[in-house]
Image (cartoon, rainbow, N blue to C red; front, side, top):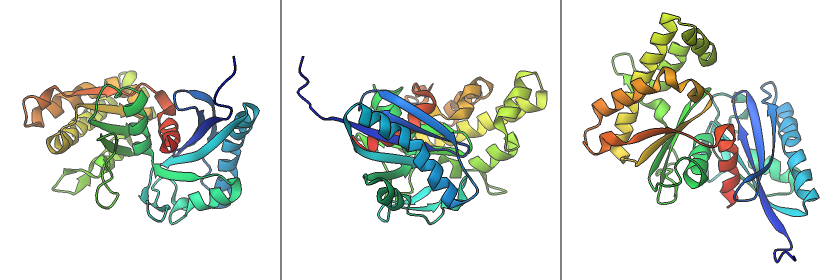
Length: 288
């Protein structure tokens, strides 16, 4: 049977994490191929070399399939200037601060590049084809190296007037000492949530208590978000969600306590369904 579309169109999505970079080849519906490498943190030159090495196998796969690449979407944990296509601050990768990565990539690869916050990418993917696809109003939350978030409303990510919307990690949870949610998270997890989770699963009381305390702070923060934007559902993801049974029940209880609307108290917190590819898929969707 002859295919009417003589030239297939794919996109590539890249998720730059604090420890790992993931890339996917995406046809608009499913992932056709994926690749991952460790995230370099030493020099910008090394970072760009490895970013290119991450993308090259997927470009080769597309060429082999006689497909055209519409563009490459890149997501990372950073505050961005969307007009200038510039990374203002990347807390986990300070070597990228002030860099215009899309322009550098376009010069190297000859393809269109779009840049977005990683939590925006996670939320976009889960809203369109993941755990949030039945809903119109979704708040996405990622917990990994840091804490990120995004609000999906009217079929798009709401960026706010200055591009700074959706930063739950900056919610203040201790007004006396000015402690933000992300700061409390790092302090409680001692900057190693995976190790703390192992200790908690082994029955370490202090580790269990730390996760419960974080769960409470997270619940209070989500209640604040619900009281402002009233989403239909909250979708959570990131590496720490695999340990969600250590804190999510506490989170749900605290959230319900501090939500004003009786109807909104029923809002569900659900785990994302796309796994660790969600961010890269959401980045690929920047061209869909």
